[in-house]
Length: 201
Image (spheres, rainbow, N blue to C red):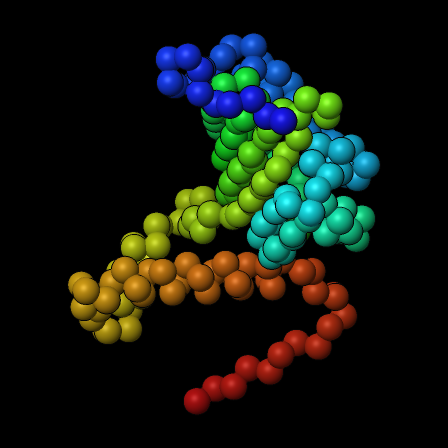
């Protein structure tokens, strides 16, 4: 089906200009379909097979049917999506990866995200995505101190020294807490809602 990666020299042809150009156009089209929430077009980019896998920020999808069901039931909540860096790696003429680093807003909240795709060219189908993964990087908001600086400030304010050996674990725990709390805080509250009581010691 897919020609061997190995050429006569024993090494695949890496990043052949024509292949990279073709994948660039395909990925641009994918991004346009994503922004328009064009579900049929998005489904068409994926190989129609039970073998494909797509991991999202919250979902784990196995097989084309699961990906299509997710697309039909979910409306993208992102705006201001901007690709910061795109790296295409083609190995031979029929296998490639497309890796992107991008900024966007999800439910109004800024996100620094990553997108990974594996593409394969099939003789009768052309290029199709066979695996994909989307994730959000946990970064401090613009203008705020980095997480290690935040840990220092908090430790100082609480007069609670942090052992150097435990410092990476503390930072990782704060990052995970921020990743969980961010989406919860993204929802708009009704203006006529009851204000939570404040208790004074």
